[in-house]
Length: 450
Image (tube, rainbow, N blue to C red; front, side, top):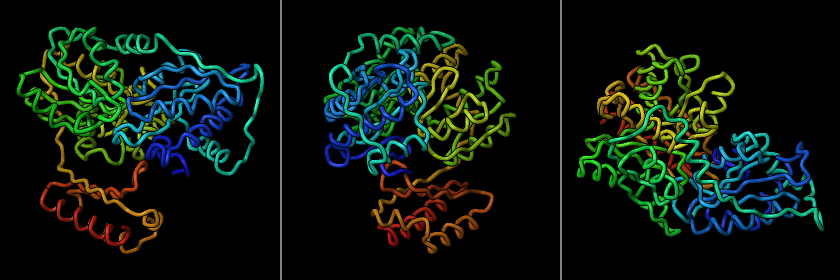
C-alpha cells in the first residue's frame, strides 16, 4: 500500500486528510504522469463524483490542478464510478478521476484514477504520482496564456452510460417487480431510469441524497431495510448498491440477502452455459467463501483466488485472459462489458437471467452452500498498523487457530487497504467454534496493536 493511495485510491476525512490543497496536487501530478505520452496539445481528463457534501470542493480543486498544468477537464457531474471507467474510453480522454469514498460515511471522501483505457492505475503509476507530490521528484509545469487548460461540462454522460448498460443485457425485465436501494449515492441519478427502461416495475429506496445521507443505514452495507421491504411488499427481489454504485448485493423474494459469492456463482454458471466464460474460470479473492470454491469444483469450473480488492481481481483476469471475477462484497467484473466492478451492470445481468429462465432468485442460490463465516474488525493505531506484520505473538495465535480448524475451516487475517483496521475472518462448519476463535484472535490483536 502506498503513501497516499490504498487499494482503492486516496481516501480520508475530507478537508482533514483529503484537503483541497492535496487534491490540487493530485490533479497536477496525475495529469503529468498519465499524459506523458499524449500527443494532444491539451490532454483531456474526465471528473465524476458521488453525492457527498465534500465532492464539490474536491471537484473544484482537482479541476484547478489539472487546468494549471495544461489539461482540459470534462465535468461529468454525479455519476457511478463505473460510468467514469466506461466514458473515459468512449470520449477518447487521457484519464478519468472519480471523487468518492465508496461505502464509507459522508465525512470521508476519496480520489480514484482511471487510465485512458478505463482501468484503475497499477501500483507503479500511483507510486510515481506519490513521488511527485511527496518527494517533489518532478516540478509542476506552469504554463501561461493559452497553455492553460479549460473546463467543460458533459451533457450526455448519464444517457451514454445507461445506453451502454442496456446494450449488455440478453433479455428485458418485463413483468418483474423489484426494489432498488441506491444508498443515497451515485445510482440515485441512474438506477430508476435504467431499470424502468429495461421493463421492470421499480420501488425506489434511499434515492434522495442530501450530501450527508450517503450510505447512512442504507445501501449494500446496510441491507435490513431492503430485506424487509421486499418481503413485506411481495416483490420478485431487491438490489442494493453502495455510494458510488460499483457494488451490488441482492435480496431474494423471501427477504434473504444474496451476497457477491452467490451472485458470482449464479452468473458464472449462466456464462458457462452460454460458452461465454473464458477458460471456464471465475476469479475471486482469498476472502471468497469456501463454499464458492467448492461450488466451482463441483461444477467443473476453475477458481482462482486473487488478493483482496477488485483491482487485484482485475489484474489476475487481465494477466491470464479471464473475463469474469469479483468479490463477496459485491464488486463483480464482467470484463466483456466493463473494465471495473459495476453494480448496476451486475444487477442487470442477474435480473435478466432470472427473468429469462422464469425462476426465482431463491431457487438459483441453491447451487451453492454457504459456509458460516465470521468477520471481526479491529481498529488499530498507526504504529500498530506498522507493527502488525512483525508481531510473533499474533502469528503464533493465527497458526494455532489454523491447526485447530484443520480441513473443516480456515482463518484469514489481513490489514484493510482503506481503513485503519485489521480484519479477522474465519470460516468453518461449527459457527460457535469459529465465533470463539475469531474473538480470541481479535482480542489479542486489540491488546497488541490498539
